[in-house]
Length: 82
Picture (cartoon, rainbow, N blue to C red):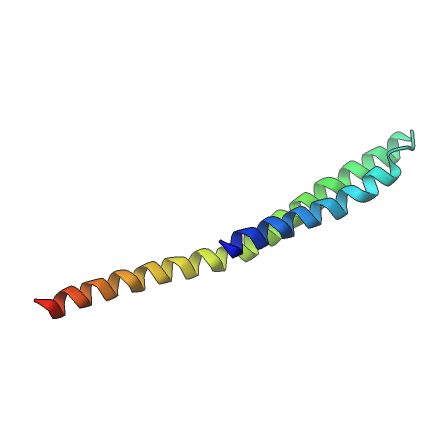
């Protein structure tokens, strides 16, 4: 549960820092600057998603390994009880 919260906070923090420059430049009416802000936002979102994936993948693998180990432990325990 803590890993999910960390990932959520990490992703949201990156997005906030990406959106902050957008709001700072949003008062400008130049369409080129608006396009640049949109590109920055899209790039930041992509980078944030890659960071989340890089963090989540090992966590998911660890959870699978844990489940396999627990399953194996149950099988061994049942075998010793017989």
